Image (cartoon, rainbow, N blue to C red; front, side):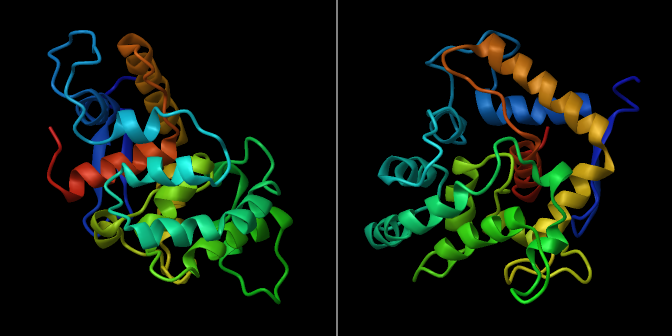
Length: 240
């Protein structure tokens, strides 16, 4: 399949947007590595949008002080009080994270509608754990949508999407879904990823190749993070 036929469609945006894989990769390249005219990236290259600090820092997989500080590097703008509140939830969050099997993927293993069910309804243990981790953070005073998602994505990048004020406004909530008080936002991300699995898989592979070429600790990204970056570049008019 040619690049012109292989495309990701952000169909759940308020104004749906289709981007062929080659153009989408250019947007991701600029986000992570800056404008480098095809040259191999070095540590002195422009690092404009926190890819190097947020995505490339080693992950502990557990909520701790270091992970909170790293999450803050993605323009989370946490105050000292916010950080303290996040840390106060660490024991509870980590207990729920331990219940999520390694390799669990939002787009292939979970139905976002299941995550929004009331506690009295039947739902899987994994969905209950994901909801529990989210709720343990979101119930802390002062921790808003962006802070919670930026922290949780660091801890389980295949499960928790990244959402913030910019992308939230652009995403069109999926009708009938109410995910964690943010109507349909998780379902919207899920819908985009399952609509074009081959294109997202190809985009993951091509970005991984860019990261390998760049070296210096550059890492590949899950399609959840790639989706976030593309929505963000659209929302902030930073597309090529």
